[in-house]
Image (cartoon, rainbow, N blue to C red; front, side, top):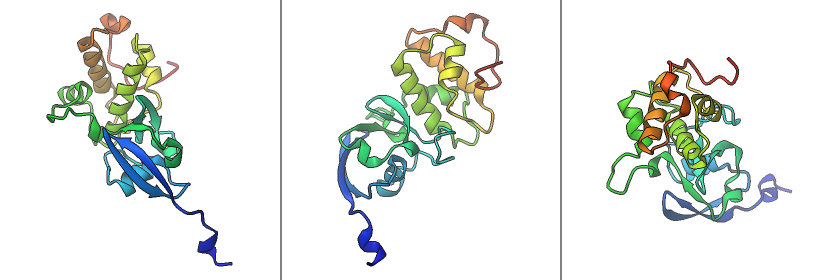
Length: 183
């Protein structure tokens, strides 16, 4: 038997990507990350560790943040996916989190930035960011190898303030060196 004849045929799936329905044929083992980057040329979502440990590939699926490297595209058939490219308004205005990142210089090399921003938007949708400790824990899955954590925290705090959700611990806020669960 020829090796290629034993491969599963591609499956046709439909994803709503950044508000637009997109149909594609993918092999059953293709991750959502690879479908976005290789099939749809949406390269804003980054491939970091490819094992769900760095958060560079974070996107929103039906409004919830996920590591796109840990889910198969076929598992998300019919889902609504928002990537970093889809956060800005139709008029090109930056999403408030994107604008806060620019204002607070919350990126250095920029590689983790799309995943950080999508994770922050998802975290805010969840409504659990009440204290700096909450934020650090909820963002602990997104690594910044450049160490821009204090500026990222400032961007998060600004966005929360603009939404009327000032973190309880902000009054006594000090620069936070990293997202650590135990200090």
